[in-house]
Image (cartoon, rainbow, N blue to C red; front, side, top):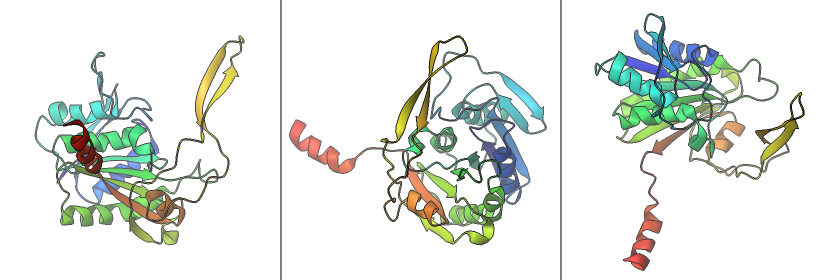
Amino acid sequence: MRILITNDDGIHSPGLDVCAEIARALSDDIWIVAPETDQSGVSHSLSLNDPLRLRQVEERRFAVKGTPTDCVVMGLRHILNGKGPDLVLSGVNRGRNVAEDVTYSGTIAGAIEGTILGVPSFALSLSFSAASRQKPYWDTAVHFGPDLIRKVLDTGIPRSVLINVNFPDCGPSEVRGVACATQGHRGQALLKVEARHDGRGNPYYWIAYDRRERPAPALGTDLSALAENYISVTPLRLDMTDEPFLTKLAAVLS
């Protein structure tokens, strides 16, 4: 099995090496194509007006000056030149990608592009807290990742569906199991803009999250699974059509 790995944290991120370790438990035919720099939050953006610069870091490991989407396209269409892969792994992201995060995440986007190009794809992310921020529990992803991926692949992933996996903020012995969960809803009330001034007195701004306590997440969601130290697994569809409302609109507009 040939595996293509990408991420959005960049070619030098520790999570990329963790993803490669997970992949090595599944195959010895591994290729890494990741962004030259951190591309967190770029979503499914594709570079159309800028050239892509490709740098070979070592054997089967490449850096692209572009987005995670660019990396998957370069991997499939140029580096591998149509010879596979059989699986795309995007991650392991330093930080969870749940609820509304899936619309912003470059990690999710890497798996989306793999799915669009017809390859079974997983987005892998690891939750962390203020206490574990500097030392996330990477060993949790390594311990559970390979077997989880095998089981999903053996089940068979429907075409146009990607698998979003989030590991909880705890060590392997504290993981309570795997929860197949729906995409949660966090709400954006906590999203804020922080106004600051640089050394010359000029204003600049940071988009940030308010750190105040959040309400308990709805049961059965990716948010609640992680809160209870479960690995969250959520299949996501490329087709975002809301069929019930489509039917209602058809009755009104046709």
